Length: 156
Ligand SMILES: [Ca+2]
Ligand SMILES: [Ca+2]
Ligand SMILES: [Ca+2]
Image 1 (tube, rainbow, N blue to C red):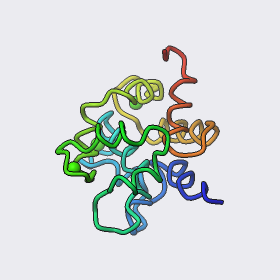
Image 2 (image 1 turned 120 degrees about the vertical axis):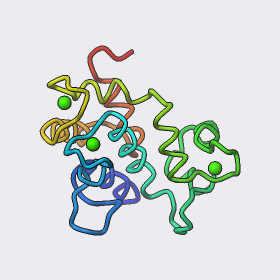
Image 3 (image 1 turned 135 degrees about the vertical axis):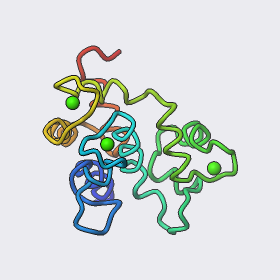
Image 4 (image 1 turned 90 degrees about the vertical axis):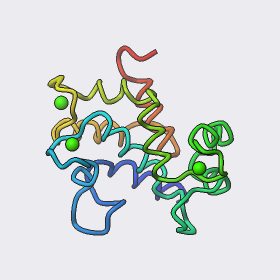
């Protein structure tokens, strides 16, 4: 049962509201410049937001190392330090945004689902992405994304 919450968060990615309490769907929330489509940068930020959506149980707006370990138990220290850009011992939403800009870990994933090759993920492409993600192996959001990434043609 303990794995259900993160799975729900990630499998509903880009569709249902998780970061947002209104009826706005996740796609609209992820579309930060409101141009009706998701750029690669917007998708990567949405992935980050979804992965760490349950990472702040005490609700102080930042993720401590102990909170981080519950979301990303595989290599928490290394990954936490990568994301804590100012080294103050907390990962903030702003740091996750900046980290997703400089990280290329999910670039291939985004490219693979950009069916029409316009550099953006439209709603139809997001639906296909979502369907694949639901079927991906893994116990948490990050593992599912990594497994999906590794299963794509052309990934190393
Ligand atoms: Ca957009
Ligand atoms: Ca920090
Ligand atoms: Ca596209």
